[in-house]
Length: 493
Image (cartoon, rainbow, N blue to C red; front, top):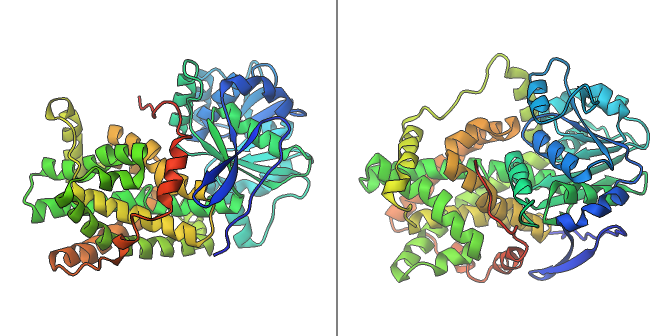
């Protein structure tokens, strides 16, 4: 294992050091009181182009416009004929005042370009995008997918531009909603990681930090673009999306078949338990908080379930990481994108399980809180900790491991799924994430069903995985990260 050593210098913002486990990482604390520093951070940027109107585009364009005011002109660029023009106009961008235009024209006219179109579109259009960028332009990304694609095909970013990244640790709607809440509560927002891949102008760090602060990030953590896409793509194919999808489907069937629960009770003990009390407790008290909240009998159930699930989580997350690192997963997304016109992705929300979920959510007001099922908690935490350990083995920064394995799940994605449904998330997230969920969720489902649950039933669970649980370094890391938790919880309309 090679642990990444990261640090940065800034004269615009105040750098702090935090101790996470046995390491020290540099961060920048955000807040609206720093907005008066943004003109200095964006010095030399007269126009900032936000390209795309998917998940992140609307939130970032509006947040940046509101934060920068008259200091920098924020312009949205969309493909000619895009149906998103209407939505952008509704958000206050217009052709008349020059804040809305065709994407390549906006790219060519901007000093800083945030490329927020889909991953597949970036892979398809990068030649034309690079050609439109002027020397000295800053190219901003909120995901490292394009770097992974370029690496795989043996190409690089143009040598005469800055390349930076700011990656909010939550979905675009949350980035906007918490920013709006921050008008009344300073520090409300979604934390973000930032990276500098190329610094030609000497302004890359300040622009990256300014971008993050302007989005409303309460804390900005440093990473590298490569580390970001490896952990992000792996995480969404593991516990953040595909993993939780496969876990709850397997548990739902188990509870109906082995505990003879009704459909609605099986849903409560599987899906509702994970997205509700399990996620809330982890958010407030870490993974160890789940175990400590249980009585002795429930702790025994948790430990057995954890030990049964951890090997499956470790095996699959390691395979996923290898597939991402090799370029295979990136290539599969690009290939799938070329097939989508002929074979569009179907929806999962019509299956009986997810129809049951709609009834359960409709009856929450009269049914009471979801149960904290110790078996469900153990299975979920075992898979989650397995992802933590894979990223630890690969040398990722502690802040990134905590965010991509735990915090983004329990503070952003799972609360959203609790409000709208797991099926809704799987059917409406980014194309890259939707493809990953459809590919990997069945693997988690099958291996838990075929290996973990029979081991529990046959009293053949190896207790060794849980033996390492209570003293794991992630508990201290999460305790420190909890001090940097946004001042308000995620808001879901």
